[in-house]
Image 1: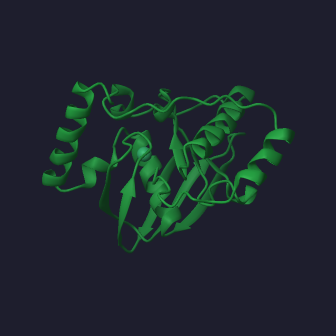
Image 2: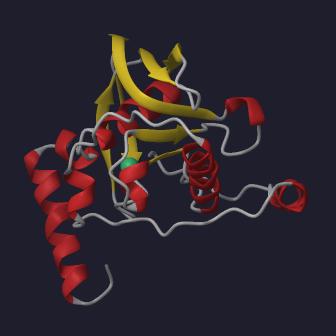
Image 3: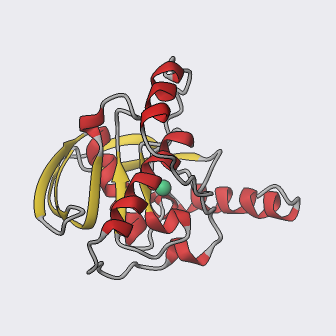
Length: 194
Ligand SMILES: [Zn+2]
């Protein structure tokens, strides 16, 4: 999701300590705009097993390495209804949120803020999102829960759930801005830099 543009964080020592205790994690490469997996709605997930739990942890590790605050399974090339969010960017273990089969059941207010995406690196744009959202989702055991998010967390929920529906933040931009970004990406692709 929203990539964290203020990335000069003194978080290295904490990360090293964490790496020493935690089992090694698989870091996935992040799929970029243009890959059809990003624009395909994901099917409802019905399997809640150790493999799913491991994948979620690997997605957190991948997201932290990329300095993002959210990551959806299609962004690692998997058409799965699973996303992870941590707006503390790994600083607070309690901020880790796993969403399986999430849906927004309530939204309130509007905030216009700049947004980016790990799958569209280097490009940002202003997107209007609700100020508050309530999400209903399942956890890794299949238990249903509800969680409320405000501001950045609400934005992250919306952005990741969009990913699970095959929607990118580009779709929320003006046509002019969207076409400009698409043209620039096309050029980068021609130059072999995308
Ligand atoms: Zn994204």
